[in-house]
Image 1 (spheres, one colour):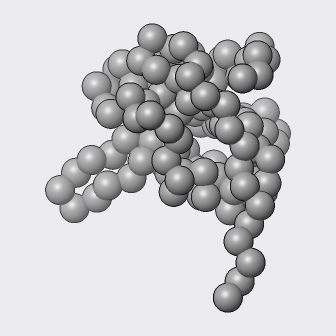
Image 2: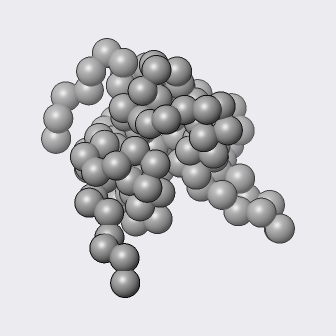
Length: 120
């Protein structure tokens, strides 16, 4: 597991605060290629369900971001959701560092977005 950079530690703080403030299942934060950060919590409504990572990606895209440098997700899940890794890869490309931490902010896993799937 890689050591978090100072900037990645800021993402961890943002994700942790967002999750704690909302009481959501997950909190996430991303940093775009311009250094802007986006933090979000899981949206779990009867008619709309979006992961915290999905909300962060949507906010970055809606703000005109062209890519990401790093992502952090706080979750009780045993691993980073495959759909979240795929969505991050769709937007940021392969090799984006994605850190998963528990509610206390302890990093449990660091993964990288995979290569894009070949079109069928």
